[in-house]
Image 1 (cartoon, rainbow, N blue to C red):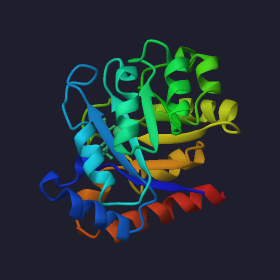
Image 2 (tube, helix red, strand yellow):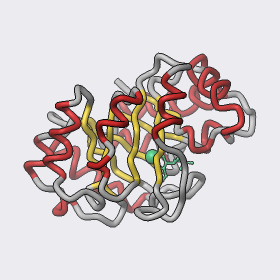
Image 3 (cartoon, rainbow, N blue to C red):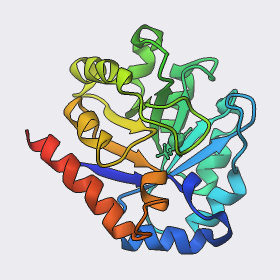
Length: 222
Ligand code: DX5
Ligand code: ZN
């Protein structure tokens, strides 16, 4: 099964509730919320109160992507705010295994993320055993609207071959109807997309999601 997750970073923040409801009506399977601290990544986005506010206007699962240093300090607060999935970066966390166990103990799905240039060898096996999802960045984290990095595909394929039975592979960055099938063919099952949905030239989110879903399905079946 393919899961399409619009990233609200590319939405109109002045009309956030409307944007959330619009992608929900358009067939989104979950929402992807990018939290940035200006340290781990150069950009700042939003934090706990905004996640809690989004929780009040939708029943969709909320996957919170923590692009922050030492995310372990804030896990309980994001759980209280209503997150369903919490993803921490292997480059930003002190003890990945402990952080992932803590996320699970809060009753949430635990995700581990890695940057495009972080090798598979940086992922501790014990941490992978404590994770439910592995988020493979296909752009340098920090901003939406960047070009998809096809050089990450071999890493995705390798992770799929080694871990597909135990982990759901997520791709994030530059995902659209062109790159989605490449990622699905390499093993991804959750597709995060920001600008391909919220900046689609038609401004029709149903159409934007439909284009990605159709292209990805063909790759999933072959
Ligand atoms: C980037 C974020 C992504 C971003 C995706 O650091 O993690 O989730 O919003 O946006 P697009 O799909 O436009 O690359
Ligand atoms: Zn993200």
